[in-house]
Amino acid sequence: MEEMSEKSWTPTSAADGVEQVLRILEGRWKLVILFHLFGGKLLRFSDLERAIPAVSQKMLIQQLRQLEKDGVVRRIVHHQVPPKVEYGLTDWGQSLCPALDAMLKWAALRENGDEVN
Amino acid sequence: MEEMSEKSWTPTSAADGVEQVLRILEGRWKLVILFHLFGGKLLRFSDLERAIPAVSQKMLIQQLRQLEKDGVVRRIVHHQVPPKVEYGLTDWGQSLCPALDAMLKWAALRENGDEVN
DNA sequence: CGGCATCCCCCGTGATACTG
DNA sequence: CAGTATCACGGGGGATGCCG
Image 1 (cartoon, rainbow over the protein chains, first blue to last red):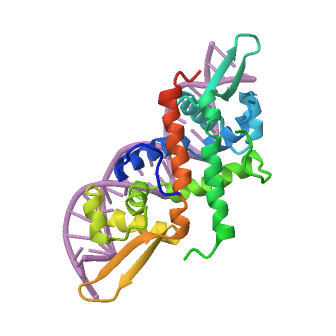
Image 2 (image 1 turned 90 degrees about the horizontal axis):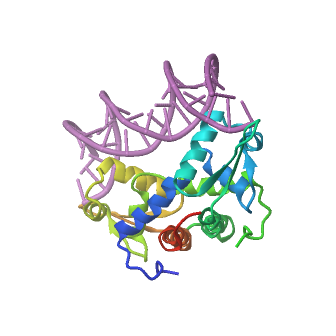
Image 3 (image 1 turned 180 degrees about the horizontal axis):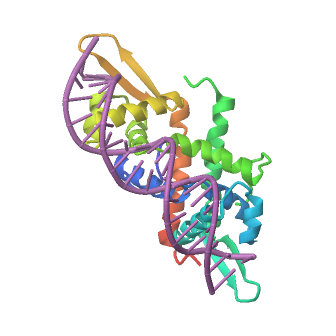
């Protein structure tokens, strides 16, 4: 429960590593988007707009683009009229599950384990 | 590798859960602080200043206070002259390890697994 | 349908100086 | 030693309107 993988981390390098991950996940709408795409689902831009009513078009496309640039989301363009664009997760994006699950479990510990010393 | 714990999460509730965790971890200096305190270490304010040369006193104390308020860090005051204050992790704070480790492993997948579809 | 371009505001961060 | 107080700024995010 104490060791960090097999690699030799310094406090600084480990923090840097995690910060890179946080930079990918940070952003007002990224996590909702991700959780809507988990399980191999493919959603159109308008599907996501409907699934996340509070997001504006600007923010939705911005967050999608950033996730795409970071290799988490892939964008599939169907050249047809009317236009059709689908969004899904990359394999690497799918593999985020265990990490997110670990965070949820940690949050759950607070309620159960309780009385934080 | 697909399921999220045993609980029934909607995309929104799961995102909310993770976002609460991110809100705790977010902050320019929190992760470095955490990694310096992992392993049950107790460090004085000035120790942390020296361990993290780039941080200002204002930011250091601010991030420590937020971590303390969130139940991750505990503050131990020794009433003596000159003043002595030590910082360490709570049990819950220590239990963050697996989650951070999962993120580092995910980041590592990018390099090894490679060619993100 | 699936975007892009502007304008604006707020808050987290940094620099600097002071205190019990 | 271990903080507090004040000022300034940069960028993430929201609202609104236009385009192929």
